[in-house]
Amino acid sequence: MAPDPLVRLQAVSKIFPGGIVGLDAVDLDIISGEFITLLGPSGCGKTTSLRVIAGFESPSSGKVLLDGRDITALRPFDRPVNTVFQDYALFPHMNVAENVGFGLSLRKLSGAEQAKRTGEALDMVGLADKLGARVSELSGGQRQRVALARAIVCEPRVLLLDEPLSALDA
Image 1 (cartoon, rainbow, N blue to C red):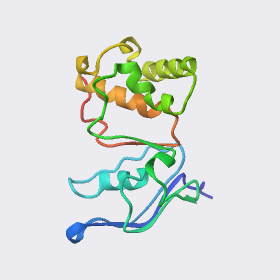
Image 2 (cartoon, one colour):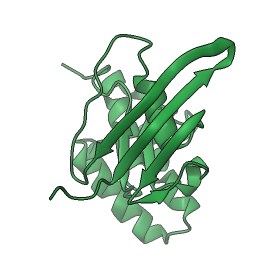
Image 3 (cartoon, helix red, strand yellow):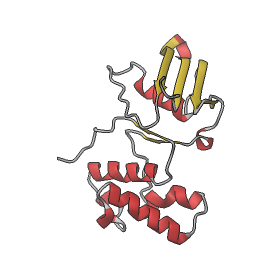
């Protein structure tokens, strides 16, 4: 018997203004621990699927389930989901450590715990030596890894990556 899915899309459709179909009755099960890749041409619904799972888009019909719980109507910040988009949305006025630790500060963790977890996340992505660097000093690949560290530092149940290989350093 297959394990219950962590994420389940049930007949999810998304119709944009003008009748443009972004998703058409998509069914998808993702088991905890799986690494899933959505492949397809531009405009086929890959990013829309991620945005629906994350809560940034509401489906026109269908359900989004997480651990069997219907989260379709939950706001993005009420979901245990973090997303790294193509545009990393790093804060230019903050250094690397401040960018990575931002979500932890919103959760009111102690300064020591924030520093510990920020350091661990940066070590995981190979940027432990860039704690105090300005975002503007980083390469595109390094910026992408800062965004990844910021997403994983809060330990989400689901991590979504949109175009994760777009800025890899050689």
